[in-house]
Length: 496
Image 1 (tube, rainbow, N blue to C red):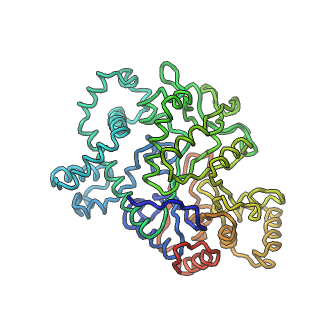
Image 2: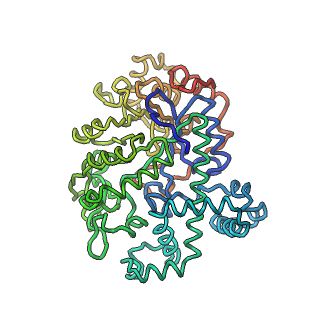
Image 3: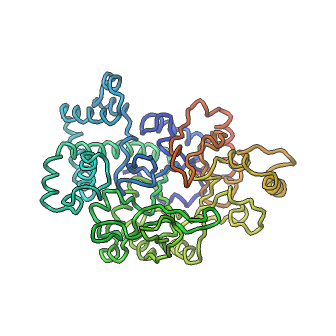
């Protein structure tokens, strides 16, 4: 299996673009074309958001499984190339879910020996999560997608006879769900192999918490803080701060850490093993939750009345590194971070994140200022949760713009009023000391607020952004390639 170890041993540049933001939003030709684009400009890292199967809102941070890939990322054209779909199938059926069902029927009918062998091997190798997940999705479909906590008690509580009966009753649906996962992983690994062959590393992301309505919580409720009826006793979030007077109530269940630690963090190790196979490096979202997490009583409507509860982050990271010694981890350490969280990150020599949009408040001690950024950092103009850099700049008031312009002039990024956003922020990220600099695709395309990926704290209008190739002008490609080369971030030695 293709893999690029020690990604952060060289200065690199990368681009942040989720798979859903490709022109066709899947793992087909555009994904391979995007690898070619990265190679052409000298970027050697492609960062995506989590690939897991989402709920109806499309958020990749609230998923139905810690392992399962999102079937909506499957390329129908690739299935056509394999002979499992015809053009007439694609032309006559508009629904992707139905088309994948057709592909499964054709897969079974055609009965290609090697493909069938690969499918059987996948089912066996991934059984530790796939069996529960496939049954979970089959049952969820049968019960009109309501949460498992609203299923009949015999299934909610996983009574053995009921589970065996369901496995028999829904055998066809279960087989289909396993096929979807097989196809997803096959297509992803083909993309990864191609990217790695071009010396481009894939950079993934895992939410620290899992959704309550997930196969994981249903299958192993003892690993989470639930009551006797399997309802959440506490939910995750963050306390009130400058940005929100009531904090954020995410609604995820908290881990039952003593139970997890007692079996050597078996669930976490399986989760990280899956991610390590998908990616060359992985970001842990809300890393501070591995030191202590904000626990909110489930009956509380806001995050105000919570408390910090310690987590065994050191023991967990020790176990992960012992079992996956080549894994490359990045800590998402944004927000209010304590000395204890910094100590945990530093003990394991994990790079943290620096966001340039946070840097220019006028304070000389701001840790996001370029001169404050250390080598063991991943530097961003902004992330998927930020406005685009052009949108950010356009929303600054005059005083804020004055502070920003003064900094640019004093540090040689602009002369007088001569500056172009977002190029100046891109150049700043690439010139920084951080080993890895990541630029969102929206910034490369010079797009504004209308093209941001996500606005935290909102429900509608997120996760839908896509670009098209006509937006990528030759001048943009050349400018990015020049800046990557000039800032010695092209370890592959290729010229754009």
